[in-house]
Every structure is written in structure tokens, then in C-alpha cells.
Image (cartoon, rainbow, N blue to C red):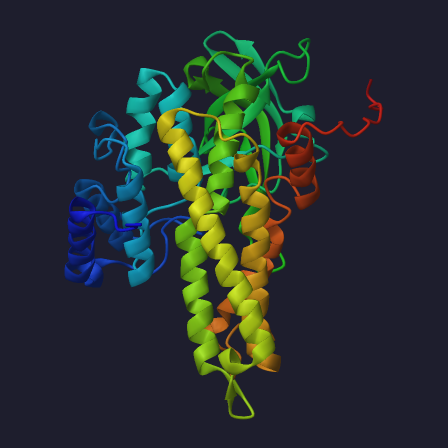
Length: 401
């Protein structure tokens, strides 16, 4: 059995490695806009990646991408090599990872031309306006309203747990525009400028100590009708496209492999009574289990990418990614903390902290991700009901009914 990729693909791998080695000094640390705006160095790096086809490889050139043909193996090779080298794969975040593929599938030609290119370049930062007080896991019960008024919609309501709203230029949001329709049928997918009059952003401090989450209030905010993606009232279906890509982001093999490599490096250096953490049988067993799960999710991601390129539905295979990946990232962060012993809990400039206090932050961040985007319990319901066809959970009558 020959499991090699073949001469052409190995030549492509060599090209990617050569690019990384020649340009690694130009690559900034970090991943761009996940926790803030991209630096000038990151914007320049992203431009270079777009030009060489190592970012947005299959996005058409007229929308700012490289314009390459979809290629499963080359996509995998790029991810493997950037992860192996520990080099930034460019700008990431809700705009690049979630909105761009949604607009390419559902957006108008004008929306694609206005928003895709500057988003890919990191020039527009986006946030996601889905959750509301009382409408988190039950998203279809959202109450933020949009009322037609001439060429605009007037939006009133509130969003919560809105990551990066304090730095974002734009929001893609779900708004109820058809109050008389059934709750899933009355929602529109709207692109909202964050500098529009009537928007107020209030930060929420999370358990990491940072205020990356926010409440966003809308008071008579006017948004052009042309900013509705797809048809009015059909936002629920479009939102599923965004959620599909959100789940894939949570299971990104590059991030899983990068965290695993960092964990191995940590366990090779941290000692207890002169014994390296990686030589401790209990820790080593946990590490091997994590490594097996990382490989499993990596190959699972290949399966999903194959389905996408073939235009096939992956079914239940797509639904398990977010749940398993978030749990795995939390487990690896927990192992990192345990490997450091009592020093693992130190952060914020403590004299004996390790890794600039990144491991406690990673653990708390991924604990939050198990809740974000639909809790683990909700994910299990989705897998069982939509994926496996098991009986639905009985619904409690709404007090508003």
C-alpha cells in the first residue's frame, strides 16, 4: 500500500516549506483579529499569504482571494506546514472564517464586492450578533426587531456575549423582521455598521479578566435594506451556513496540532523531583490520548472537506466537531496546568509563572467555548435529534404563548 502523496504534491509541500523558511521573519506572532485588530505587520503578512495562495486559496480573485481550484490535499498540506513551523496562518476571526463563506454562498454581487475583499485583507473587523438575553441556546426566540421604513430597516433590541463588538467595524446579526410569521420564518440576516447612530456597546468582563465579550444595544438604528443577506425573512437558513463554518473553526486542525505541540514542549521541560512531566506514566498516557484525538479530528476534518468539495452533505459527521474539539482543547489545557503543578495556576506577571500565563488563560477560554455557540448539552441534543434521528426532547410551553 502506497500512502505517499505523490511527486506533484510533495513538490508543492516543498514550495510551502521554502516560502515559510524564507519569510518566517516577516510573520507576526498570533492569529490576527481574534482578540483585537490586526497589526500593520499582520495586515502585510495577510496580503502576502493572499498573493501566494496560502490564505483564501479557493476564493475567486474578483473577491480578493487567490482564485485557485478547490484542492483537498493542497489545503491540507498548507495547514500542516504552517502548523509544523509554528508560523501564523494569517488573519482569522468571525469575518474571515464565518462571514466570507456565507456571503460567497448567499450574498448579492454588490455585498460580495463591498465586503469580501476588505474582510479577507483584515481591513474590516466583524462581530456576530446572535445571542440575546433569554435567547442563547434557543436562538429562534430572539426579539431584536427590524421594522421597514422606506429604504431602511429600523432596528431595536439587544445582543449579548458579542465577542469583539468593542473593536468591530461591522456586525452580522439575526433580526426579527416578520413578527407575524412563525419564529423560524420571521428572521433576517442583516449586516450592521457598528458606527451607526443608536448603537451602544457595553463590555462584559469574563473569567480570564479580559472584556472581550459585550452587550450591544440598538435604539432606532437605521440599516439600508440592501444590507440584508439573501431574502427578507430567510435568515434562519442562512444562519445555518454561518454556524456550519463556526463549528469547523472550533475544530480547526491547525489550532489543535499547534496546541498539542506546545503541550509536548511544555511536558519535555517541566519537571517534578527531577522527573520530566512527559516521563510520568499518568501524564504520558493522558498526552497519548490527546494526541490520538487530535489525529482523529484532523482526519475527520479531511472527511468534511472532501464532502464540501464534492457538494455532499456530511450528515451527523459535521455535527460532532464543535463538541469534541472544544472538549479536547480544554483537556489539553488542563493537562498543561497539571504538568506544571502548583505553578500552573500562576499568571498576570507572577514571578514563577510559565509561558506568560497562557495555560490558565487557555483553560478558561476553552471552558467558555464549551458554552459558546450552543452549550455542550445543546450540541448533544442536536447530534441525537438531527443527526441520529432520535425522538425530540419534549418542549415546555412558552409563557409568551
